[in-house]
Image (cartoon, rainbow, N blue to C red):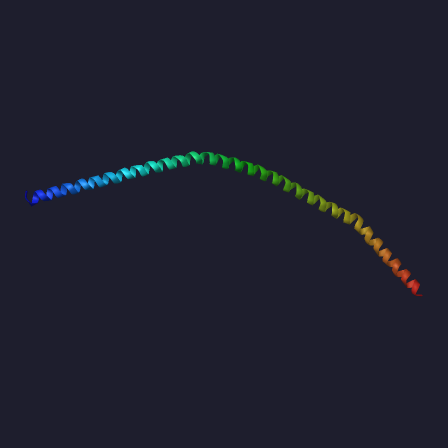
Amino acid sequence: MNGADLAAIISAAAFAVLVLALTLTLLRLAKLIDATSAAIRETGDSLIPLLNELTETTKSTNRQLEKIDTITDNVVDATSNLSSLINSFTTTIGGPLVRVGEIVAGVSGFLGKKKKK
């Protein structure tokens, strides 16, 4: 056995160890990929019902918001009508009440001057 034969045996052994290490690494990688695939599959299976529930919740929320919009519009209309009613009342009753107040003040002032004499 000469040096070349010994080098060939060492090279072959090193190559066998390298192949064995790569084989083990690839097996571990295959297990990791299988576990990742299973996790993704489980996530996908649970994600679909969750998305369906989220869609239903969004639809229900939109229906409630439409009801709130209707209520808000009705409150705006009622407030506008009340404001118009108050303006009409003030215009109709306010002018005569001011005149009555002026008359009362005038009579009070006249009677107050008469008592002083």
